[in-house]
Image (cartoon, rainbow, N blue to C red):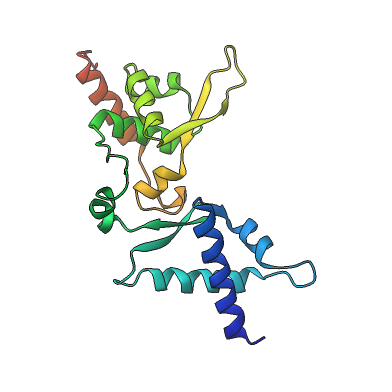
Length: 198
């Protein structure tokens, strides 16, 4: 089999797997499914096929995309066609994120895994409503329990978080300074009517 034929078969197989499952699949699982014990697929060969497939889906005449989410790959519809899809299927409504939700989400994203108490320490106010909303929107989820009295829940971001913000991994988040986190705390305290000492 020529390299060109091999590349086409890898792309077609990846497409079939991702279409059939409808979820994000780890690159390692895809590679294991594509190769055999006698002839495993190489990382370089796999990545070349994935990159080519991604480029093909980015064409203007395609309605779906192939995206990477922290080492996993998934087929999803392009945002441009959300309104059209909503007329046919019961699409979930788009959620609007208030400043409070965005601030809470930012803290989880940068400090994860993090507990409610740690979020509240940074924001200076209760975060129960914000955390519950972010869990409801599937932007954050429980990722474990802290080994401490009461075993508080640890929260982290989800694949939907990456998808919503158009990034493929947490490494793509911009750097945030300690001053910015302090600003979050001061803004939250101001919202709550707490006097912040200068």
